[in-house]
Image 1 (cartoon, chains in turn purple, brown, green, red):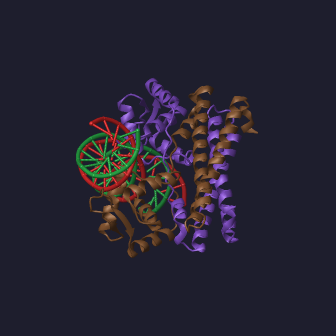
Image 2: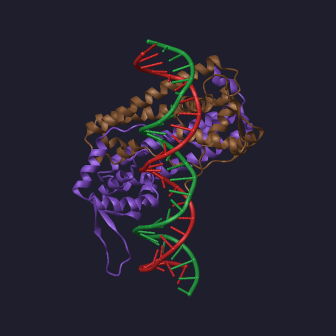
Length: 188
Length: 188
DNA sequence: TTACGCATGTAAGAGGTTACATGATTTT
DNA sequence: AAAATCATGTAACCTCTTACATGCGTAA
């Protein structure tokens, strides 16, 4: 019960780029896939141990010689197959939960001022994210143009950008509408 | 640990519209807030019991006389205050997880055909949702124009519509780009 | 030498979904 | 009479986050 965790696939996919440590994977995921995927410590390390146990990944370098403890993992052939099988499979739509939108939905009890404040906060959050992902996009286009992954990363970054822009527009329009008290405009 | 559940607020907000049973709340939520909020049986009923225990809601009608068991709850004054306190509070950004986008991100290992299939499936899903929410929007504008909640519901429906439309455009553009093999267009 | 970042890992415990159980009522 | 839907509720059990513990290396 409680639908199957996808953490293993996030890990396998990351290791398919190049060998990494758990620490690397986590930071890298939060940095570049943050807008649609993330993992926490408590997920990563047990998952790595398990994936190693069932031979989907293996430790490449244990760096025992006086170096700091650092486990760098790499995909096995079996791991690649597992990754491929998952990649090909169609996905179910995931349920999402946005507390903010729930508040806006139940917003009848809020004053105009409070309601506007919610949307403005959201506007700033989205704007910040948008700028952040635009920077990553620029960076990829400039310094990783020929990386075989870049094309796919840009596609998903472009998706994030498109959607964030749309939400930004919505914030803008909604604020304008509320401020002008043209509440009826939605009903036309 | 494991961040605080928002189920109670989803329930309080629903009961603020009008008294409802647990069954009603669940169905109503999946129907109209499905694009940004949902609850499952296993959450609703225990939460209702608990909310009643701490006097945020109470049973309005137990309909004992030969009628089917059906508990209709209504907000108490205390419940209204709790709802207001939550509504006013700023929200944290929620982390979202999209398995599909993760696959597209790791898409290097997929054939063009497989990749396109993923996006096309998504396109259809989004299109269906878009049409569904457009129907609800029309319904509200026609038959519930003067309902005090309608204005707020239309705002969130409009948000869903805007974002879904953006994603649809992205699907379209991305498919076109891949099909034309103009992979370099992203790099310009 | 103090502090911060690197790096791994575990424990606790709430959150959430699915499946099952139960029984009434309405529809076919 | 059977099947579908209404309606509530519980149990199992996985998921996930937060917090804590630990220790090394490096920079101020």
